[in-house]
Length: 111
Image 1 (cartoon, rainbow, N blue to C red):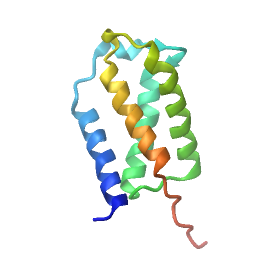
Image 2 (cartoon, rainbow, N blue to C red):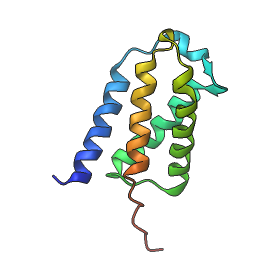
Image 3 (cartoon, rainbow, N blue to C red):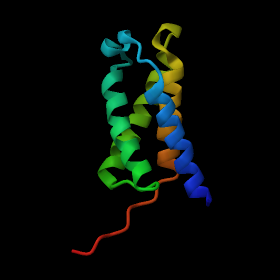
Image 4 (tube, rainbow, N blue to C red):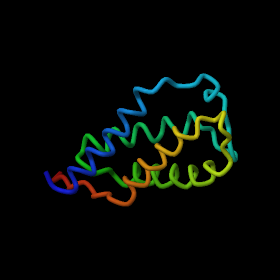
């Protein structure tokens, strides 16, 4: 297993941890720093799934979404209170950061 595989495994484990944690109902309507947190979670989930499934590769549109989410998380994190389940958002920030920092563009397919 090389370093890229290890990194994909780390993100996959963080994703699994996130999926297995009960979702606090109050987060369904929470907006912090102008960011709808459910939408942020949903967008990152889709991109993370694809990135992991592709062994650390994601198309440019997906990477744009991850970069956007990462920026939103960086605005949100300082504004969270203890009631906002900050550990959830820190975990998502770590996932997004790892994806952006270690992204491999997908191989071009012949048409």
